[in-house]
Length: 274
Image (cartoon, rainbow, N blue to C red; front, top):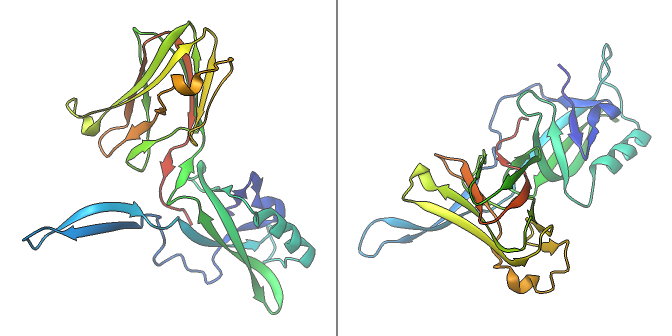
């Protein structure tokens, strides 16, 4: 089965390139993007060590090989003119999405830079070794978007199926106020599904106008469609986060006034298929 990949929205099959193994082996150690660094301190008067903090020290990196191939033919040479076009496509100065057309992985994207090396046999180029360096220790799902209306009497439940625990800022959150009000939008999450361990995020924007559209992004920018001159003073600088842990992914979103909300985000996906 020929397995292509996609980078920056262009499929490798356009260039006749497909995944391969030059040594014919699929065995051995492969990265999963889970390198956590844990810092500890020794407990006073005890032979025990206490975790002070933990963090991901390095981004996810992995490599894969591709060969030029056409059905019914052996490996084909990659010409110099072809190589120039392939390098123009793959070697970028910004992060781009990489995706593999493998079953179960069709919708996992790796936001990465690529480093490309040629694979020569007898002085001719037949394949490439490609190394990906991501912007995070993981990949992401395809974009997801939910739009819903809220009143003080109802709520919206959103399940954030992430492979990483904790809170994450959506790519964008758009809140349309439907009346003049001091608007509050909250997300409630129960840690380990325990009602006694509540985590609550409350976004507050005072002096909203009917029809005003407020836009937030994951870089913590805020803008308004209305001439909201005191927006910076009326906003409490709390951004809506989505949560998940090992036991739960249920986020309950509520509001104190009528509003329309649109949330666009990607969830974390760990591991690589190659």
